[in-house]
Image 1: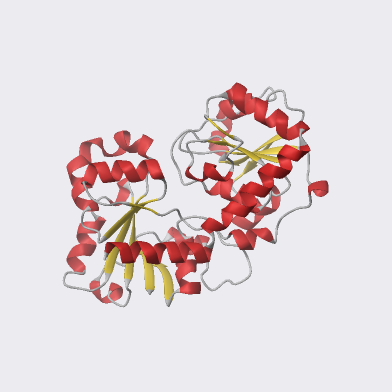
Image 2: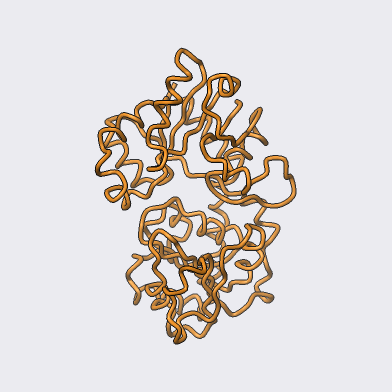
Length: 321
């Protein structure tokens, strides 16, 4: 199968389908790598004309509030074509109302233009299915877990730190800090933009702020963590917990994140700061528990590998034919 992700030229700057060495950014843009490696072709380009698209078997639309009419445009270009339009709804269901409430009918009709529809986590799948009255597949984005295995840091070489993931959609830094407040490890938060520093207390909330990094630089830094923390309070497929699992980092994660099943013993309500704190303390004091958490997550995370993601996508296409 020949695949193209359209309408998002930023992706070309974040992944390189010809790079066979570095691990590429997890998530949406990895689909191009998946099809380049296991299919016939994988591209990312902002094409929308028929003559550019008909050479592909799959045209993938990442459906967001900023490209709300794109499915109609592509459908009209590919009229009577055998090329399949695949659409994933790329918005946390908890953020739908503020983005799509005034465009509900248009949103519904646009999603129905696709031949195959998927969402990346179960709650969103149910919501899109309820909205459109049609089958919606659950197909998480890929993560190069086998590539990440090569960057696992030995436990004895790691730093006494908790690596915490910041999410720009919520801007929450306080809740995650409260879960770690009394844990005697350095508290390091990843992914802030300089404009977000007002969200960090100047009186000792986090010991270190690490701003946006290139992916391999992020991997190098996060792999130093003795523990990980991702308490995103919305509904995402959850690339960070998958990366924690692949890197052998025991993590406390929100049970709303799709990939939280990798950490069944340390998944918690994102606002249960007391429960999360107890889990951090156990990870600090119970090595057998730590070993079990690491082993379970590491074994399960292969579900998100590039090869398994390719097979999952193929199965999705066959089901919907």
